Length: 135
Image 1: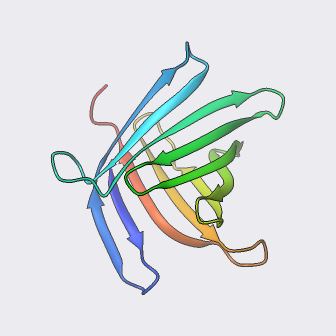
Image 2 (image 1 turned 90 degrees about the horizontal axis):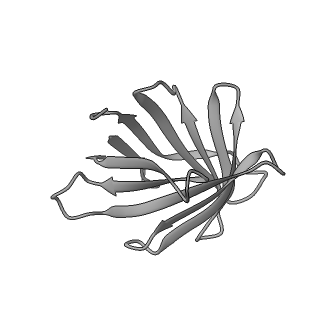
């Protein structure tokens, strides 16, 4: 994956990285691991997401945790057209919107946005351009 971080001071930071996705809990959930930058470099992010589908809400309960940065988020994810959109709150109390767009069998574009309140505009903080390297 290629990552772009849009910093508060207007600068841009870039890294490479890796993602690993798989079914867990006997096929009842998807777990992924996000590592930045690509190993063997020392990690600046090393976290995991657990996504569990709930037919009662027709959506996914999502828990993200990056113990390296003491960061976590809870969200609800749903399909919106061809995209997947996850909405929730992070460990700082900010509203979060994570969007998976341009989804193909071998790639996707992940856009991370945040805001302080419902009346504030969404601000893009991260983008991940992810592509499959192994079948």
